Image (cartoon, rainbow, N blue to C red):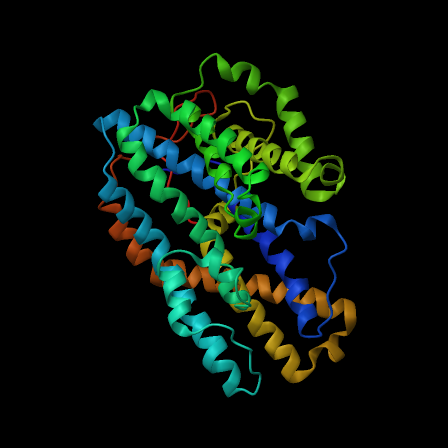
Length: 384
């Protein structure tokens, strides 16, 4: 099935931001050299929000296309596709994480203080409430990364069935209203503290989905202004400020920053994927492949980081490489092992479930977007 061009590289860049964000934090907790002096090294959470936008965009795009072709949405097939793409790696990491903190670390003389029972861990995570689990206990980094998958699944518990019964022409108004209402509840209601604690950023999916509805219905007159080169340049400039400096973070209140980020990244996804006259493209075979395995990179990077730090601790490699050298080697090895593990997982583990998922596709492959036209390809569902 054809993939929307330029979005796989975006996936990888987001995953890479998460990796370099976690390396110094976890390194510091075990006494290894760490440095996070650049703003771009502190944008891991923002990168996860970008994944939320991508997910909302791509899945809503598919739902619109499915409804246009078949007149309805198969909730059963929707959930089967989600399960086959998300669950295998999710439960693999969950199982390994529980084994790692409860069995492996004590066996090697590095006990981790476990605050939860196995029953509690399974209850929270099997019910896709890992965000509540991760921010109620000190679960360890390998299990913390599951929180974002829980947020995705929670949103699609609502959006999957609703998309079946909501008329296609009401998708955009509903998502816009959801963005405004839930955004207000998230930041200004008595529930704000709880929603923020457990990171229930559902409005990012709504913003991405809103742009996904526009993409699914074609370019139209609306896009001539939206896709103009000055608007593109402004959006890209704001994105650079957001990810590489603290200017916008200092200028805007948290609620305004988050809501603006949701719209900004949604626009960038729309532009990179569907603008035939974009300022530049991100296409390359290497980046496309890394984007395809980005779900694994995100899910496995904490395992890779823990392994690298364990080796450094056991052999005191920080004394061999020195401060700066250790930072470079820890970051490089973590990224390399995460990519290697994700590649093996995609080829020998995930691919089996992806082939099964193909039986439940409702759309046939369509041509890629041509340089001169707006024929949107069918998009794969988001991995993370």
